[in-house]
Image (cartoon, rainbow, N blue to C red; front, side, top):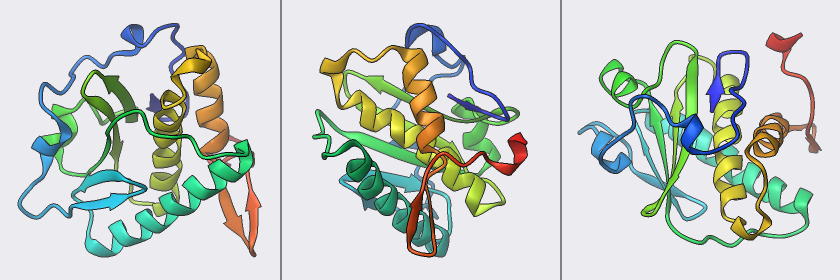
Length: 178
């Protein structure tokens, strides 16, 4: 789970469960003004503007391609995954976001979900989105039995993916952590 400047370290998915878990699918957050979209076969439900959504969708598509390139292959999906980009206070509290909790990913028998609190800065939103999306990608590779602490480290590492002057940059320390 992505928190303000640090990550929670846990040993099991149950131990990292947020206090306020959604009882319905993320589709329940789709406000009348929400913008539905699909990125890399993942439905995206958002309160972002069409322009914000287009930019984040491009970022996420680029991230997905970069992730596949860096690990040397595409990770096949084992089930549905939904991404919710949340801004409004009604849904922020309902899904356990706000304060120091900026995002989280969760896997259930019905599929995987990522919840990201939209930030004033696109760069910060993108970092949180990449972090949570990395969890979704890693959960697709269930046979690997990757420990939870390791997936947090990988999600942190891959959250730094950026494209600068046509080059793929990964592993740069975010300025707020210096």
